[in-house]
Amino acid sequence: MRKIVNKPEWKSFVFYGLLLIPTFFLCYGNNFVFFVVLIAMLLTSVIEIPVYAFRTKKPEYSANEAKCMGELYGVPVLEEMQSNSKMSYTTRITLNLGGFIIPLLFSFYLIFSFCQEGSCPLPLLELSMCTFLIVLFTYMLSVVKGGVGILVPNYVGIFAIPLGFVLAPSGLPIEAVAGLLIFVPAILGIIVGMLILLVSRSIEEVGSAFYNLGGIGSFHTIYLISLLALLIGAISVCS
Image 1 (cartoon, rainbow, N blue to C red):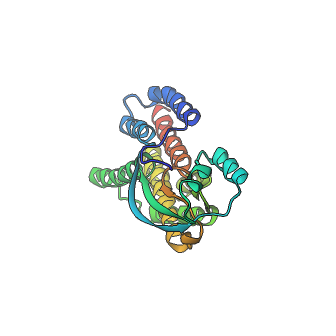
Image 2 (image 1 turned 90 degrees about the vertical axis):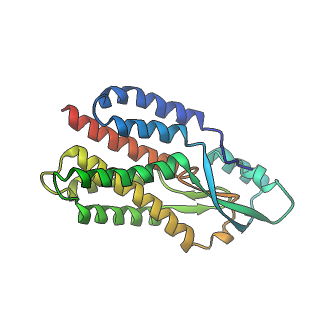
Image 3 (image 1 turned 60 degrees about the horizontal axis):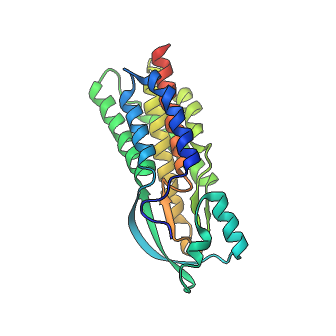
């Protein structure tokens, strides 16, 4: 069974860690809070916070299928299926600390900080439109996989980059575009899209021991767009 503190995917962990090293020099003195948030997201990506439990039917995979899926997605599907003799899971919905809670809180922090500055009005319409489109993309392109949970393609959040620049009002600084119209809509859109998918599909029929929101199946999507938004904002300040 997967635990509340999961083993990190070391290859991805090292890859993102190496990317953050040159990013530090871009962000030193500018966007440093954003950089610290990305470090926190990476370090806490192994922590899952359970919020709800219910019963789901175990998928009818053969041992080889379950083993292959486990190797493909980094989830112990076979071990979960063999954990007891029952035909159903005690499924837990968990929120990943680094892939759900921290980016969600930081999104609200960015909105609040921008409103406090008062240099220009909050682009609420553009923010809402971009978020709605990311919600739509997430819902349409994501799948619920038995034994694994919700799988969000890694490229979903990248849609926020062209959307943010196209919808950005004139005069809005690029670093504000990166935060308010790329990072925030991507995070809110992916999270809301996953929640809609979770409640709209009959997940009791698509069994999994865990549904990790922001963790397995979606962390890479969220972290990739977060890193890209940080780089866009940092490069704009340096140029």
